[in-house]
Image 1 (cartoon, rainbow, N blue to C red):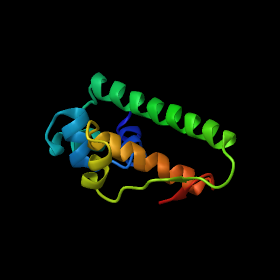
Image 2 (image 1 turned 120 degrees about the horizontal axis):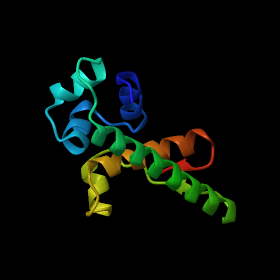
Image 3 (image 1 turned 90 degrees about the vertical axis):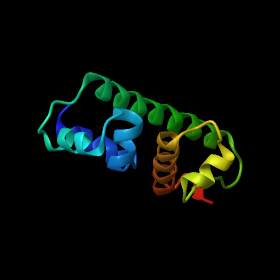
Length: 117
């Protein structure tokens, strides 16, 4: 994974540098920035984690699309403006899962498949 790919993945998943560094890299944000700037090599565990999140996102989108195809009428997906709001509904999930959900909700909305609520 290149530094530009790492940055693209992070943005695609709607993660801030501080969130990605804390929850994925387990490093200080300055280290994550060095990875994205190409100043330091990206550890394999970070590349693996980003690829896993990308696959989880794709799998969840496929599941939702399949369920949309089985539904009658309009459908909507919850868009949580804050992690606190998300955590009330999903107390076992972390910030990364919140951002993943937001990324999925945004894509489904822009595809015209779901309304945001």
